[in-house]
Length: 269
Image (cartoon, rainbow, N blue to C red):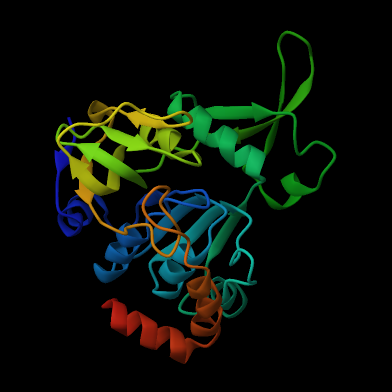
Protein backbone atom coordinates (compact mmCIF):
# COMPACT_ATOMS: atom_id res chain seq x y z
CA UNK A 1 0.00 0.00 0.00
CA UNK A 2 1.32 3.42 -0.93
CA UNK A 3 2.55 5.72 1.81
CA UNK A 4 1.25 9.29 1.79
CA UNK A 5 4.41 11.38 2.21
CA UNK A 6 5.51 15.00 1.78
CA UNK A 7 7.42 15.30 -1.48
CA UNK A 8 10.74 16.21 0.13
CA UNK A 9 10.50 13.15 2.38
CA UNK A 10 9.56 10.87 -0.53
CA UNK A 11 12.59 12.02 -2.55
CA UNK A 12 14.91 11.78 0.44
CA UNK A 13 13.68 8.27 1.19
CA UNK A 14 13.67 6.75 -2.27
CA UNK A 15 16.01 8.68 -4.62
CA UNK A 16 19.72 8.03 -4.04
CA UNK A 17 22.94 8.95 -5.82
CA UNK A 18 23.92 6.62 -8.65
CA UNK A 19 20.44 5.25 -9.30
CA UNK A 20 18.55 4.88 -12.56
CA UNK A 21 15.51 7.16 -12.34
CA UNK A 22 12.63 7.88 -14.71
CA UNK A 23 10.48 11.01 -14.49
CA UNK A 24 7.92 10.42 -17.22
CA UNK A 25 5.07 12.42 -18.68
CA UNK A 26 3.96 12.92 -22.24
CA UNK A 27 3.11 16.53 -23.16
CA UNK A 28 1.28 16.95 -19.87
CA UNK A 29 1.58 15.63 -16.31
CA UNK A 30 5.37 16.02 -16.44
CA UNK A 31 6.59 15.70 -12.82
CA UNK A 32 8.43 19.04 -12.55
CA UNK A 33 7.91 19.43 -8.80
CA UNK A 34 9.51 16.06 -8.12
CA UNK A 35 12.43 16.77 -10.44
CA UNK A 36 13.02 20.12 -8.78
CA UNK A 37 13.12 18.40 -5.40
CA UNK A 38 15.76 15.99 -6.73
CA UNK A 39 17.78 19.05 -7.78
CA UNK A 40 17.36 20.70 -4.36
CA UNK A 41 18.54 17.55 -2.62
CA UNK A 42 21.62 17.58 -4.89
CA UNK A 43 21.37 14.01 -6.12
CA UNK A 44 24.31 13.07 -8.32
CA UNK A 45 25.46 10.44 -10.83
CA UNK A 46 21.92 9.57 -11.94
CA UNK A 47 20.99 7.70 -15.09
CA UNK A 48 17.77 9.29 -16.35
CA UNK A 49 15.26 7.58 -18.64
CA UNK A 50 12.60 9.46 -20.55
CA UNK A 51 10.74 9.54 -23.81
CA UNK A 52 11.11 13.03 -25.27
CA UNK A 53 13.08 14.74 -22.48
CA UNK A 54 12.39 18.45 -22.43
CA UNK A 55 12.83 21.28 -19.92
CA UNK A 56 12.87 19.18 -16.76
CA UNK A 57 15.79 17.03 -17.85
CA UNK A 58 17.59 20.10 -19.20
CA UNK A 59 17.31 21.54 -15.70
CA UNK A 60 18.51 18.36 -14.00
CA UNK A 61 21.43 17.97 -16.41
CA UNK A 62 22.46 21.59 -15.91
CA UNK A 63 22.26 21.15 -12.14
CA UNK A 64 24.83 18.35 -12.32
CA UNK A 65 22.48 15.54 -11.31
CA UNK A 66 22.92 13.37 -14.39
CA UNK A 67 25.64 11.02 -15.63
CA UNK A 68 23.72 9.25 -18.42
CA UNK A 69 20.57 9.90 -20.44
CA UNK A 70 18.49 7.12 -22.07
CA UNK A 71 16.00 8.85 -24.35
CA UNK A 72 14.23 9.36 -27.65
CA UNK A 73 14.39 12.92 -29.03
CA UNK A 74 15.32 15.80 -26.78
CA UNK A 75 14.36 19.42 -27.20
CA UNK A 76 12.30 22.38 -26.05
CA UNK A 77 9.05 21.51 -27.85
CA UNK A 78 7.94 24.24 -30.22
CA UNK A 79 10.96 26.40 -29.32
CA UNK A 80 14.31 24.75 -30.04
CA UNK A 81 17.33 23.27 -28.31
CA UNK A 82 17.97 22.16 -24.76
CA UNK A 83 21.02 24.29 -24.09
CA UNK A 84 22.09 22.66 -20.81
CA UNK A 85 21.99 19.25 -22.47
CA UNK A 86 24.00 20.61 -25.40
CA UNK A 87 26.57 22.21 -23.08
CA UNK A 88 27.05 18.89 -21.29
CA UNK A 89 27.45 16.92 -24.52
CA UNK A 90 29.52 19.46 -26.45
CA UNK A 91 31.62 20.95 -23.66
CA UNK A 92 31.39 18.56 -20.70
CA UNK A 93 29.74 21.22 -18.50
CA UNK A 94 28.99 20.80 -15.65
CA UNK A 95 30.40 17.37 -16.54
CA UNK A 96 30.26 14.96 -19.44
CA UNK A 97 27.00 13.22 -20.30
CA UNK A 98 26.68 9.70 -21.69
CA UNK A 99 23.87 9.25 -24.21
CA UNK A 100 21.86 6.17 -25.20
CA UNK A 101 19.40 7.15 -27.91
CA UNK A 102 16.42 5.12 -29.11
CA UNK A 103 13.37 5.67 -31.28
CA UNK A 104 10.00 6.48 -29.72
CA UNK A 105 8.72 3.03 -30.69
CA UNK A 106 11.64 1.30 -29.02
CA UNK A 107 11.26 3.31 -25.82
CA UNK A 108 7.55 2.47 -25.63
CA UNK A 109 8.32 -1.21 -26.13
CA UNK A 110 11.09 -1.07 -23.52
CA UNK A 111 8.60 0.32 -21.01
CA UNK A 112 6.01 -2.31 -21.88
CA UNK A 113 8.59 -5.08 -21.44
CA UNK A 114 9.69 -3.71 -18.09
CA UNK A 115 6.10 -3.48 -16.89
CA UNK A 116 5.59 -7.13 -17.89
CA UNK A 117 8.76 -8.17 -16.01
CA UNK A 118 10.42 -9.28 -19.24
CA UNK A 119 14.17 -8.87 -19.85
CA UNK A 120 13.88 -7.32 -23.31
CA UNK A 121 11.50 -6.10 -25.99
CA UNK A 122 11.27 -7.02 -29.68
CA UNK A 123 10.11 -4.84 -32.54
CA UNK A 124 10.18 -4.56 -36.32
CA UNK A 125 12.35 -1.49 -36.30
CA UNK A 126 15.95 -0.41 -36.68
CA UNK A 127 16.50 -3.02 -39.40
CA UNK A 128 18.15 -1.33 -42.34
CA UNK A 129 19.25 1.62 -40.21
CA UNK A 130 22.61 2.50 -38.65
CA UNK A 131 21.23 2.87 -35.11
CA UNK A 132 22.88 -0.36 -33.97
CA UNK A 133 26.26 0.96 -35.12
CA UNK A 134 26.15 3.70 -32.48
CA UNK A 135 24.00 2.02 -29.82
CA UNK A 136 25.23 -1.38 -28.57
CA UNK A 137 21.95 -1.81 -26.64
CA UNK A 138 20.26 -2.62 -29.97
CA UNK A 139 20.69 -6.29 -30.91
CA UNK A 140 19.28 -8.75 -33.43
CA UNK A 141 17.19 -11.78 -32.52
CA UNK A 142 15.76 -14.53 -34.71
CA UNK A 143 12.18 -15.66 -34.16
CA UNK A 144 12.24 -19.39 -33.27
CA UNK A 145 8.91 -19.90 -35.07
CA UNK A 146 9.31 -18.02 -38.36
CA UNK A 147 13.02 -17.32 -38.67
CA UNK A 148 12.31 -13.60 -38.98
CA UNK A 149 15.10 -11.32 -37.77
CA UNK A 150 13.86 -8.67 -35.32
CA UNK A 151 15.41 -5.91 -33.26
CA UNK A 152 15.81 -6.51 -29.52
CA UNK A 153 16.29 -3.84 -26.86
CA UNK A 154 16.62 -4.17 -23.07
CA UNK A 155 13.58 -3.60 -20.90
CA UNK A 156 13.45 -0.44 -18.82
CA UNK A 157 13.68 -1.41 -15.12
CA UNK A 158 14.64 1.77 -13.25
CA UNK A 159 15.40 1.89 -9.55
CA UNK A 160 12.85 4.69 -9.14
CA UNK A 161 9.95 5.73 -11.36
CA UNK A 162 8.26 9.10 -10.78
CA UNK A 163 5.07 10.29 -12.48
CA UNK A 164 2.46 12.99 -11.89
CA UNK A 165 -1.32 12.54 -11.92
CA UNK A 166 -4.49 14.43 -11.12
CA UNK A 167 -5.77 12.73 -7.99
CA UNK A 168 -5.17 10.03 -5.41
CA UNK A 169 -7.37 8.75 -2.62
CA UNK A 170 -6.20 8.21 0.94
CA UNK A 171 -5.34 4.57 0.16
CA UNK A 172 -2.90 5.68 -2.51
CA UNK A 173 -4.95 4.72 -5.57
CA UNK A 174 -4.13 7.15 -8.38
CA UNK A 175 -6.24 8.50 -11.25
CA UNK A 176 -4.70 9.84 -14.48
CA UNK A 177 -6.87 11.56 -17.06
CA UNK A 178 -6.26 13.14 -20.44
CA UNK A 179 -3.30 12.12 -22.59
CA UNK A 180 -2.04 8.83 -21.21
CA UNK A 181 1.61 8.18 -21.97
CA UNK A 182 3.65 5.45 -20.27
CA UNK A 183 2.96 6.44 -16.68
CA UNK A 184 1.30 3.13 -15.81
CA UNK A 185 4.19 1.20 -17.33
CA UNK A 186 6.72 3.32 -15.43
CA UNK A 187 5.07 2.49 -12.11
CA UNK A 188 4.91 -1.23 -12.89
CA UNK A 189 8.44 -1.43 -14.31
CA UNK A 190 10.22 0.42 -11.48
CA UNK A 191 11.61 -1.13 -8.32
CA UNK A 192 10.20 1.84 -6.40
CA UNK A 193 7.49 4.22 -7.64
CA UNK A 194 6.59 7.71 -6.45
CA UNK A 195 3.50 9.52 -7.73
CA UNK A 196 2.86 13.22 -7.22
CA UNK A 197 -0.74 14.40 -7.55
CA UNK A 198 -2.63 17.66 -7.78
CA UNK A 199 -4.75 16.67 -4.80
CA UNK A 200 -5.55 13.85 -2.43
CA UNK A 201 -9.29 13.25 -2.11
CA UNK A 202 -11.35 11.04 0.22
CA UNK A 203 -12.28 8.76 -2.67
CA UNK A 204 -11.83 8.69 -6.43
CA UNK A 205 -14.80 9.55 -8.61
CA UNK A 206 -15.64 7.05 -11.37
CA UNK A 207 -12.93 7.33 -14.03
CA UNK A 208 -13.65 9.07 -17.30
CA UNK A 209 -12.96 7.60 -20.72
CA UNK A 210 -9.27 7.33 -21.65
CA UNK A 211 -8.19 7.39 -18.04
CA UNK A 212 -6.01 5.07 -15.97
CA UNK A 213 -6.34 4.01 -12.35
CA UNK A 214 -3.10 2.79 -10.78
CA UNK A 215 -3.81 0.81 -7.61
CA UNK A 216 -2.12 1.82 -4.39
CA UNK A 217 -0.55 -1.62 -3.96
CA UNK A 218 1.64 -0.92 -7.02
CA UNK A 219 2.90 2.42 -5.67
CA UNK A 220 5.39 3.09 -2.87
CA UNK A 221 4.66 6.75 -2.13
CA UNK A 222 2.10 9.38 -3.09
CA UNK A 223 2.84 13.06 -2.52
CA UNK A 224 0.41 15.95 -2.89
CA UNK A 225 1.99 18.60 -5.13
CA UNK A 226 -0.48 21.19 -6.43
CA UNK A 227 0.65 22.50 -9.82
CA UNK A 228 3.30 19.82 -9.69
CA UNK A 229 3.37 19.49 -13.49
CA UNK A 230 3.79 23.23 -14.23
CA UNK A 231 4.89 24.58 -16.73
CA UNK A 232 3.44 21.54 -18.53
CA UNK A 233 -0.26 21.08 -17.99
CA UNK A 234 -2.60 18.89 -15.98
CA UNK A 235 -5.83 18.10 -17.79
CA UNK A 236 -8.75 19.58 -15.86
CA UNK A 237 -6.53 21.72 -13.60
CA UNK A 238 -4.39 24.19 -15.60
CA UNK A 239 -3.05 24.85 -19.08
CA UNK A 240 0.45 24.58 -20.47
CA UNK A 241 2.49 27.73 -19.86
CA UNK A 242 3.79 28.31 -23.38
CA UNK A 243 5.43 31.60 -22.39
CA UNK A 244 7.61 29.79 -19.87
CA UNK A 245 8.84 27.34 -22.50
CA UNK A 246 9.91 30.32 -24.60
CA UNK A 247 11.54 32.00 -21.60
CA UNK A 248 13.42 28.83 -20.76
CA UNK A 249 15.31 29.05 -24.03
CA UNK A 250 16.72 32.39 -22.88
CA UNK A 251 17.37 31.23 -19.30
CA UNK A 252 19.18 28.05 -20.30
CA UNK A 253 21.24 29.40 -23.19
CA UNK A 254 23.97 30.93 -21.04
CA UNK A 255 25.58 29.37 -17.98
CA UNK A 256 25.24 32.58 -15.99
CA UNK A 257 21.47 32.95 -16.47
CA UNK A 258 20.97 29.27 -15.79
CA UNK A 259 23.02 29.59 -12.61
CA UNK A 260 20.75 32.41 -11.45
CA UNK A 261 17.69 30.22 -12.08
CA UNK A 262 19.31 27.33 -10.23
CA UNK A 263 20.16 29.49 -7.25
CA UNK A 264 16.59 30.77 -7.05
CA UNK A 265 15.35 27.16 -7.09
CA UNK A 266 17.62 26.30 -4.18
CA UNK A 267 19.78 23.84 -6.08
CA UNK A 268 23.06 25.74 -6.44
CA UNK A 269 26.13 23.77 -5.39
